[in-house]
Length: 330
Picture 1 (cartoon, rainbow, N blue to C red):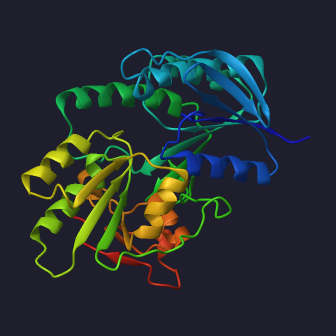
Picture 2: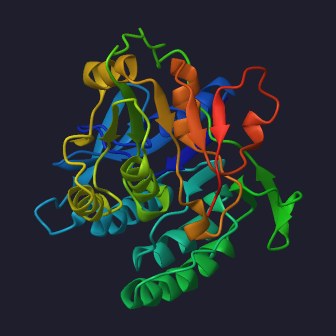
């Protein structure tokens, strides 16, 4: 009988989100490895326990609350995960590190009481390297760290994306992985270039550490003969879109820096077909990172779109084709 695995991430069913490709890829990978996979997911009405084609309602969501998707959604996620663990037996629990809430403590205690081995993923490693934070963010970071230390005490194996940990972290086994994508679900682009302009694609959730203000300022400083357009594609999850829109207007680039918001499916395919080059995060230095494993790199490459990057990515070191241009990380 296959061993049961419970996968705990913020997975929304009724809307596209920027980490969906990663989560779907991990779920398929676990299934291919022979695990019997369960995971939690939600829409604007309910949280569910997903198992193959089965979908069991666990409780209601509360999207009417301000900022629910980014904050209290996690409280509900951890509460429902705890209740599932208390009712079912699992061989493994896999959880991606995310903002901690009071329910974190109860979830960690439930994991500790179970017989499951706990795999804890840090999607950006090392931790605690952000160089600048607001006072509120700094206070929350300390609260978050305290709760994280408790859940770390229940951890059996760390799963790390970023710098090589050498096989251990916090005195426990650690395995470094790279972000991956499923080539079966990402179409190669059908290139349809614009003969009159160079089109640049900046695909992200628009956080300050994506550093697209560097890209905007570079366009303002450009004195070449090409007509260049930048397509900013992604939700304002990271909160930097208003700042970058204001910068665009300040520099007189309103007709050359286009903010599309979230795009998926055929609309996103059309942008990939049009654009000549993609841009990865250009502000990783703002988090103190010099090594990364970005999903954008993988999607750009899978679709056949050359791209610009600013930090090391171990997965790119041995690639046969020069698909990227390295720029400074400062």
